Length: 265
Picture 1 (cartoon, rainbow, N blue to C red):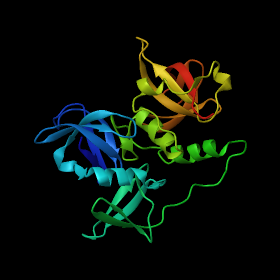
Picture 2 (cartoon, rainbow, N blue to C red):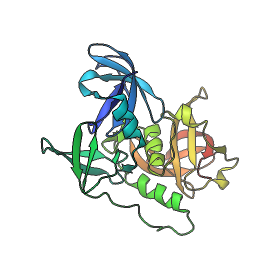
Picture 3 (cartoon, rainbow, N blue to C red):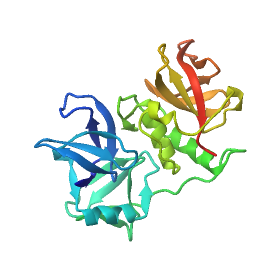
Picture 4 (cartoon, one colour):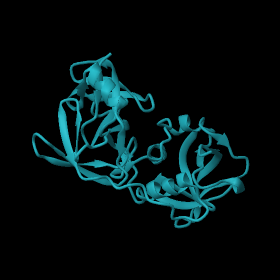
């Protein structure tokens, strides 16, 4: 089975093998995948991080040999923890930005190699120290990451500060603290332990919301007492209670609460 890696800022993964098809998710720099089906112009892939399947253009595919692929997976990785970080292609000397949540092998003397390509970069900032009283290191780190996405516009299938959807936001925030979650809200709801009462919700718990048919259609992260950070229109903080999300600006409930789950144990 062929393998590949994203060496672009991001690559659109589509529901069908055509450019007009909806984008269901994105690959970020350094994320790997396996090719399931190959046509002249499109590849059906399965991502390695969460097993998500979709189609990418062959023009955005960077192949890895099985040896390169295995070697890359075994390398210690550096996660980008700032909204943007610039890399420079060592051969072309072209600099380009990559997004928070991207990853690459930990640099040696300011450079790293993926396959046959070498890149240079500045040092990536270290995770911040505890700044919020009474929080665990994981909770503090989670808040620091989540707040960097504030005001990012909503984009169906998006996973970056340039555009992100609700489940992509939850997935990327937890990725930054070392917890891998599935891609979609309907899949994420199966992770973690149920919180029986909203009064017991803690920072880092994940809230899920349903439509009138009882289908999970939205998700967000508890970020304070009766507060939730989520992507709806843009990444924002709203009030959360036993009914759901109350938007003070609109003066109405926008999402109906179904369940709260805890994955930080």
